Picture (cartoon, protein in one colour):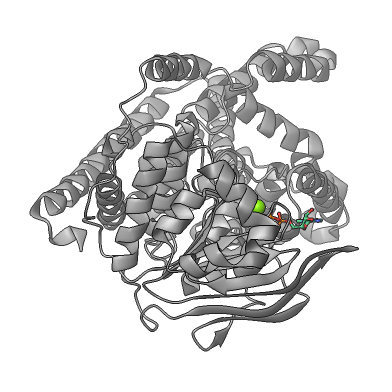
Length: 614
Ligand code: ADP
Ligand code: MG
């Protein structure tokens, strides 16, 4: 285990100390926010500051959902309204103390957030956006039709102020509480971004397919993220209701949801400080222009147009320009690639936790049709531990389709896929990956906005998640999980010879490094069966040979490998046995020698390809 290494242990202890120091910084920042708020005397300034700070909390919550997790949901105002109404109704109609009604309202908002997530589990992108817009309409109508409970179209007037015990806070004190909460929201968002949960969220945003193929349960992840961000929005809503003392169904409208998204987009979606800038600008500027109320929408629309066309990354873009410039400089002097893999690998322990050691993968009589196209008519393959199984066949013979069947992307029309004794062909992709079958893609699907190190850490998510609560609060426990993940990522990169690239953005890597990283990333999720779909495509001869060394090394670790490949030199060098697919069924199976001498294979495929490869 990497953590038995004293250096690695030091790294983790260092991370834990850093996490403790951040608590001190957080306490100081919250104290400062409270102190400054208590100095505010002017009622209008109090009002404007309160509004800005509440928007900051909501936009940070939105940043987790839209920015990091990439869930295009436009229902923030509706969720905020649930928190606001929940808390106000709790206090006014049920006589619950604020300190209980407030979190209960937020919890209700969290649950409604999960409800709004249900379409996200099936839909993505613009469809999700449309459904979530409809969600605002429904929420607004429910509030209007809520009768006495919600106060109907008029809303709830005379909401009691924030009360702690029997003490009612003054306007200024409420502002101070809200300011402290806003600082905490920024801190929690930053902690989330720098946790396994944050990395998994961005991984899902960058490539949901790849995330699933590495065992990340994206359904569970989406639900958790919708819940957390809705909870934050609901907390802001409760503070709003009791500090403004009047709420109406207007606060849940589509327009309000749009403005919140606009704040995020304008400031810089998926950045740490963008939400702060966006929320400040779009709360304060429209208020200053309140004399021009009738142009409000026009101005907002104009800002949105300019923001999206001119500054797709938001007002905090200078950082991005800097990052781009830095990347340009990096690619102008690409880091030296390690062509040769080390002769023996000092891989971190790849043993799987729980379950039997390295079972055999077997697929028999697999049929898969796409409408009229029969991609697989009678395919079969077996991969035993400590063995490299080659799979070759002409283009269109069904190799990638078989990989997709083995990894749960497709459910076969007939046939059986087993891992050990377990029938797996109906399991989800994530469940199959968790069972130990992990793949790479014919076209690499990296998490391009994450660094190399973060790609490797994200794929440890399913066996090293840490708790979501500790991720949100950046606890020492979270620092330990982060440190352990970083150690394993570092060991993997070192073993595979690209530790120099750990800090690089994955999307900027060369083709060869991208393929290397995809394999390393697959290893980081501790597979017992590794499936590689044309890993040598686009590699130089040296890179191909170093890939061979790597595969031979992995075989000695007991991994079963299925290698789909066109490069005959690679296939003939490393494979123990080879399966030849032709038109969706097995044409031949045997040792490399037997395959080389098989007349049918030579005729169908090998004769031409071997000649070309030589
Ligand atoms: P290979 O990887 O061996 O080149 P594929 O598995 O990609 O072959 O494709 C096998 C056959 O199935 C091809 O005829 C291809 O056009 C067809 N096919 C693959 N995927 C799909 C799909 N999603 N929809 C329709 N046809 C498909
Ligand atoms: Mg293919």
